[in-house]
Image (cartoon, rainbow, N blue to C red; front, side, top):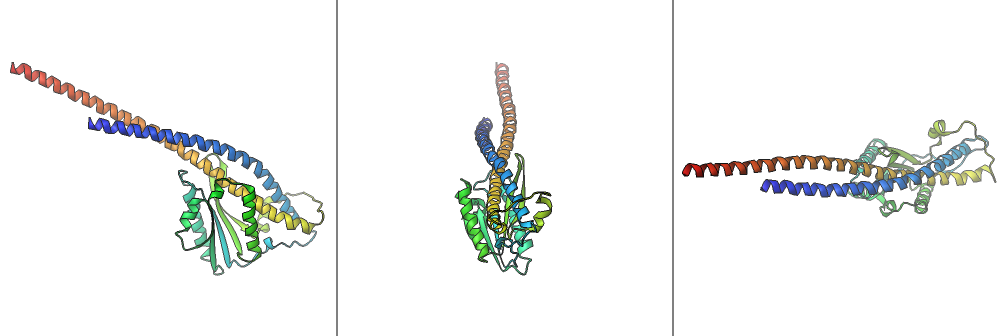
Length: 296
């Protein structure tokens, strides 16, 4: 009977866990839908602005000059790492942190020009991880990922742009998860500064767009490059947040399925143990009855 009670307690624990994971799955699914709506509206605007910026910069009418296109020796580098604040989302955070460390080892530590490595963390998991690493963490944005908004992102990126102009950093990269669909995301490393026009030109530049620049092309370039960087950074953070909700929803779905299967297995064990206990009791009663008859 002690074994039966233990199995029954385990069944109750699994049922409680299943209720929790099912609720978390529904919450994540609701957040995912909202984040997807934001992303569906943001991506076309960001992509179009990016294409206009490329067309403007690569138009051969005048020479282009912008501090954000200036390629320098990467003596001081900044790596932006984007994770979540909480866990229970599978390998969402671990793969980002692993990619970040691999990027540092293969791109920074092997480059003799790199003299200083700084880290900017978005999300609690990144902040906790890099607090134990021998790198200079210049900022931790934890609450920002809970209530992601463009205005605050704009302020952060504006400071980042000024830091690049002032030669505080010579290279800025970002490691984050890119949302593909509800069950797929990919970890990517993007170069944020300097804006590498040459690498993006071949695949991104539309073949036949023509623009009339007012008041002049220089003024347009001066404003459109920072604007594009800000919008695309906000989009990349939104992609990470959307991918987080998708990863947590998938993880909780799998946990609920595993709990259901475990519950079935435990109930089967309970029924077998109960049946064995009843059989043993019947055998004991029969043996006792036979012993009484034999005594008489």
